[in-house]
Length: 406
Image (cartoon, rainbow, N blue to C red; front, side, top):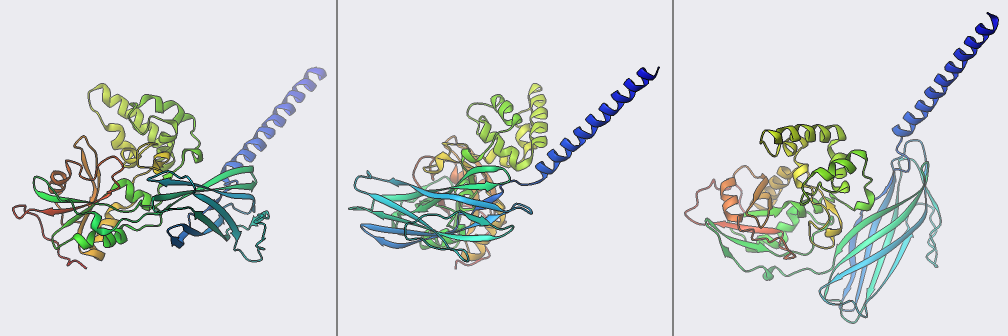
């Protein structure tokens, strides 16, 4: 009897010990998941072309490290810059050199360019300067510099590599290059050529620079949704995306032409709206298809589900990235109208005569826009005409803008 009692006590004690151990492990896992690990980001920064001569360009960027990790410091033991040049012609005889210098308090700028390991304090911004020196016999054919800043974070998650991608335009077309008006059923349309748009640009400023010289009262300006998103910095390189269990399995069930048919493409949507919403939308959408109703998934998953462009979906070098849809498109349209006097819309148009109006100023007719854009005057290739100016014909009826062009 005593031996049986002792065995029962021993089993009970073991069970309690195992239970406590599981609770401890669960607690450790929960606190790990609650924390952000090596959550430090390098900003895209502000960039200027300080030297712009036929045989010599110097690009200078002011960027900042920001430590988002709670109660923990993160170190930057390594950093380097890599440059890919895109050109209309070849790159023979063109050389690039890079230099990264610390600009935070107490930093020592070494003549040999060596980066001394640096601790980024909790919640702090530590600035750095990146210089790209480009030399060659003739640099006039260069279009863009794609700068990849590779840096190593060292902290709670160990050594974790990250990359900040920055696109800097190098060629700027003259306003006069956009002069070919084309007739549409209800308007004349003018595709507007711009430089390669990047996070350094602002939609209203682009309209002022390239569109206003051609515009007159009553005109309408439209911008492509992907270029607007790019100006907002809403693009991600697949190397920075970690597809989860759900994305790896569901992506196989989308059409091959869908931007959600890859694990990284679908994970991008999951990161935006959450796994529960995506799974629910997929489940209900699949059931709806059985009764012949299509498009339910996209209605339930949200607007971004239709707008995400996977790799190859945009012009180089953005063809290497996943581009999201724009944020607050109506606000952008209203600001363009306030600053320029032009009615504005942000659109998604393709060569299949599909025209989707994401947002527009209140005075516009969507039917008018769709008729004017149905031939896709901006094009889907490398035309680099992300902006279209629409001039309605005299017979076209629409509410006139209340704002003068300014």
